[in-house]
Structure formats: structure tokens, C-alpha cells
Image (tube, rainbow, N blue to C red; front, side, top):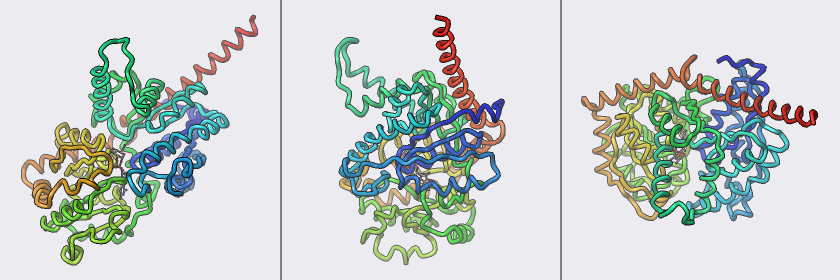
Length: 480
Ligand SMILES: O=c1ccn([C@@H]2O[C@H](COP(=O)(O)OP(=O)(O)O[C@H]3O[C@H](CO)[C@@H](O)[C@H](O)[C@H]3O)[C@@H](O)[C@H]2O)c(=O)[nH]1
């Protein structure tokens, strides 16, 4: 990278992450990454969320790497005004999904505090989660670029944008007819139009046609800088990534070390998924009947309820199955040679972490863009087997609908992936090649490293342009 330390040190970038693990973890990783280039980085979020990643940042500062200090700024979360329980500062803390609207409302109320911070510290750019559309107004107000982070891949962003354009086109019959757009969607569209470019946790070689396609339809720059989980494994305790793991590192490694290569199925549905009790029972019965070794992560708000697991389940599966109630050290697990498959809801971070570790997937999307991610994994990349869920539910709707997938389908799909055979071997080969490409992307001279350099250079030239414009205006005034 032709970037000089002095030039980089002149930049200050402010990060506004969304308060949900699937967004917070990769955004903090990106902030750390950018800080390694000697750039001043600030992160603004609420106290609870800061406490989740603070230890990772402190570790950085004691390393010999070229880190600048990352400034942390607290935003006070408006619980009372948004009718939320106290300390409910992250989407994974919500006691019921019905409160998700209140949560969005609370995040919208953060704008004045964020505005104050930006006015006070005059950063040169904002990197914001797309779920905080008001950051576009702040960036416009202070004349600085806003970069968006979507959390997902360019394949899925492109589909979302293409669908929004086509449904929008279908709802209007003439260029002049007024039409109604829901308020929140409207804010996103407006923010998107004011956004300078997109930072993505992906790598170019994985989805180059979709990176190019998105740049074309959106008319914006895209910088794929991932997989971000790969940049940080050397500098942080991987068991503390996003949350403190509910199991000791030694315990899990001892268990995995005792297994044969590619023999273990890892089952985890991300950080905010909600299942009906009846669905958990079916998963348990299916894993038991498959007779294969597994690690099954059950979120603690579900795991702690009575009667969630089938009667006598833990005694029957004994040492064959390891159940983690709470937070698993996912990246550590996926990278162990004993793990040969990942049953996932297709949250993008999970997909990318699996690709990076060279592990094929069983895809079980639950809501949102996870269905697009499944399509990408199964049909485009050819590295996964679908469990056969076709309907998207509103977030958490499973609670009311009950089990969508019965135990026998779980067994059949687990056996399809974990049972070997030519098709599965080809899948393993493909995903392991993608894992190699991921490592090359973050190695010296790799596409993601080059993209970080380009991103920083772009921001520097924007800053210089702004300074020159000011000087020219000043000179013109003096001349008058
Ligand atoms: O026990 C756990 C559970 C999760 N994780 C980590 O938490 C992140 C979870 O992210 P993801 O797999 O993307 O799932 P969600 O938490 O569901 O992510 C939300 O955000 C993603 C990024 O926008 C979207 O793709 C998803 O649809 C959306 O649900 C990953 O880094 C995991 O490694 C752990 O380390 N341990």
C-alpha cells in the first residue's frame, strides 16, 4: 500500500455499529483492522455493548502491532423513552420479539447524541451500520462521507436492492403519481442515496460478479475487506469474540481432539434466532437418531427453560454430543479438523466463518436475507445441503408456529452431509479451495488488504479535496 504513516495519521474515522452480535462483531473487527493502518478510529455505542468488546481492544494496545488507540464513546440508550427493560441494549437481550419495534425506535433516538459527538470530534468519515440510517443526515450536515455496513454479502444486498427496485416499479403507474413508502424503509432509501460507499465483510474472489453488479446498480464503491474473523485470530482471545464463551477452551478442545477428522457436526443458529420448544425437541431427536457426534449450541434464554430437551437426552447421547448452553467459541470450533459440517441458519457471519474454515454446511434459513444466503451457498457455491425450509417467517415467529422440520428430516439431511460419498467429497474440495482463497485475500497483497488501502486512500483524497476547496474559497474571498 502506497499509504504513508503520516498521511494515514491525518484521518479520523467514526464507527457507529448496530447493537446486535451479527453486526457488532464484524464492525468492531473492521474498526480494529483500519486502526492497524495507523488511522485514528473511534467507536460510539452503548455502555453494555462497549463492555462486550472492550477486552478485545485492550489486548490490541499491548501488542507490538501498529495500532493506534481506539477511542470509545458512550451513547446512553433511551430505555424508558422506548419502553424497554433496563439494560436491554442489544437485540439478543430482548425478552420477547414483540419488543423489536421498541428497540428500533430506541436506536433512532440516538441521533442527537451521535450528532453531538461528531460535532465535537470532527471526524473525516463515518462508517455506519445501515440499520442506523440517521447517520447519513449527520454525515451530510458536517460535509463528510458516510460509508455503510450491511453485515451480509453482496449477493444478498444485490437481490434486496433489485427486489426493492422492481417492487417499487410495480407499485407506481406513472412517473408523477405520488406513492406511500413505509417510514422506516423511506429512511433507509434516503440514507442509501446519501451513502458514499459500502464496506463489506466478504472477499472479492468469493462473489466478484455480485460485488461488480452491486457497484453498478447502486452506483457506489464497494470495498470487500474480509473475512474479518481471519484478521484477528492472532491478536485476540478467540473465546471472547463477541461474548465470553460459556465453555472453557480446554474442555472443548479436549472433546474435539478425541474425534476423527470431519466427523463432528456443529449446530448453531446464530445470536438472535428464536425456536419453538417443539422445534428444539425435533432437532434433539434428529441429532440423537443420526448417531453422529455433534456440538449443539442452544441460546441460554431457551436452554434454561424446563422441558426444552427430549427426556433423558443428555444421558443417552452421553459423550457423543456436546451441548453448549449460551455462547460458543464458534470460530475456534469451526477451525478444528474434527468438525466436518455446520448446521446453520445462514446468518452471513456464520456462512463466511464456515467457508473460511473449509467446512460444508447444512442450510436452515429462518428469516430475512438468510434465504438469499442459502441460495448462494447451495446453488451458487455448491458447498451446502438444504434442510428444505422454504418459507421465511417474521423474526421469532417460530414461537407461535411450532416445529417446521421434523426429526426424520433432520436425520436424513445430517446423513446426506456427514455420510460422505462422491457429491459430499466434491463439496468438501470446493469449500476448502474457497477457504484457501479467503486466506489469500487477507494475506500480504491479497484483495482484501488492497481494498483497505484503497478505502483509506479514497477517504484521504476526499479530505484533501475538501481542504483545497476551502482554501480556494478563502483565496477567492481575499481576492474580492
Ligand atoms: O454461540 C455463538 C453464537 C454466535 N456467535 C457468533 O456470532 C455471530 C453471529 O452472526 P450471524 O451468523 O450472521 O447470525 P445472526 O446473529 O443471526 O446475524 C444477523 O446479522 C447477520 C449479518 O447482517 C445476518 O446475516 C443475519 O441474517 C442476522 O440474523 C457470528 O460471528 C458467530 O461466530 C458465536 O461466536 N457464538
